[in-house]
Length: 237
Image (cartoon, rainbow, N blue to C red):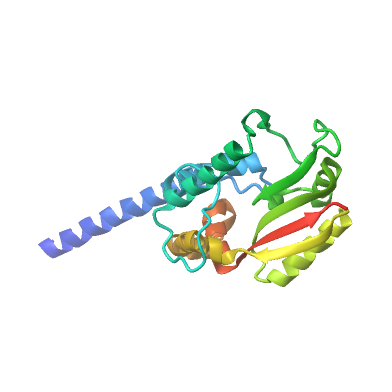
């Protein structure tokens, strides 16, 4: 057996081992492809935890950029800016002793009294609702008259007008009026573009292998880059 043949066999062996290790790693990271995963299951999956730690510094939200910005780096700058604005507003309005943090399921908000909120803000969570009508009725019940509901939603439908029509219908059915929609794509595009570029090859591979349901974040990152983010504001009469 020639030296070239032996070298080729060694390379094939190394390549085979690497493919096996990659397969094991992918299988380990992938979630269990539950058809109806809860929000808690989604965020606690290993894929989610690795992605949020690596890309977002262990936060759970996007950065907001000025229109026309191309580069998302440094990502931590936009994350800190959002936190800084929040802290500034809390101090400015002397709200430090009035803020409470509670964990709850928005399908069941009976622990809160009716008409007790002036504003309700939902970011990238309404899409996880098992019963959107019930959730909106709960929000309507909790808001004071002329209270405002704000939804921040990624559009994966490739038809933004259709999604906006659906959201308007749901909100009107829930008792809301004066519904306004704003396209925020330009303000979040730098980060979504990064997710799309980094995840595009795995995205295509998971599509080909038929395992897209096991890699929700990789699929969602690319799909959001390909589509839009919208901001919806509605008022309780």
